[in-house]
Length: 306
Image 1 (cartoon, rainbow, N blue to C red):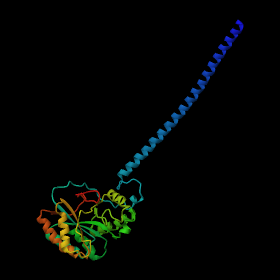
Image 2 (cartoon, rainbow, N blue to C red; image 1 turned 90 degrees about the vertical axis):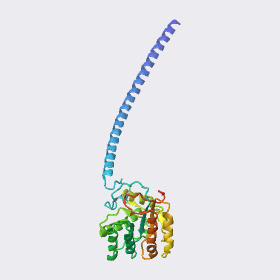
Image 3 (cartoon, one colour; image 1 turned 180 degrees about the vertical axis):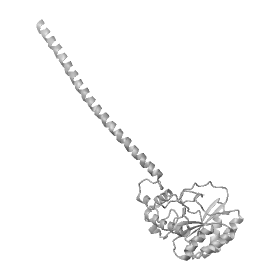
């Protein structure tokens, strides 16, 4: 009985020691493979880090190229590559003053009314802004030059004024703008910085594209002006001069800054008739008349209220 117990204890001890050796061996094998996996993971991580650093260096280079380009554009939209020379010098907007200022603006010219408007402005020694459309005749080209020669601001309105066409896409708007931009430069030597959207910056024709068009034109450095006073002369071809006068004067009163929408086309003879009385009344009430320039903070639909 005692011998059996001794043998049993010996076997138990030997078995226990063997089990310990087996466990230790398994642990060694486990840690070995863990070390191998860790080394592999470290190698993979180092490779990823190297690739990431390379990627960021490439991104940084691209960013530097982007920021140093004339148009400061990421390669996101094909239309940003169109007409790379069609850019305006960006100008800081000046602080608004307490002065009561009226900016008379005339859309859709030049026309047979343009010399009449220019003569009236000269008579009172004031300057205005003309957002013009495309005509290519000797007589009209002289009018573009006359606007500039008399010290007024000239800006792009449209080439075709066909809103279903020009607001079809950003590309179509840029094409229309480019033609007028080049024509003004060819006739006057002025590289236009200001423009007015046909129908205003937000209208029923451009609801799906106005954000993109505005963003692209601002990116190129151009400034657009909507209006906060309308003369009402677009309502028909023969709005009475008295009504035009009342619309302008009543809506200018109480404002520090008024951007007045008027039209310069053959049918707007009553606009010309109303103009002297408008000027005389507002001058008597302490208003100053000025032409828009790139430093003037623009009035824009849905963004600014004066």
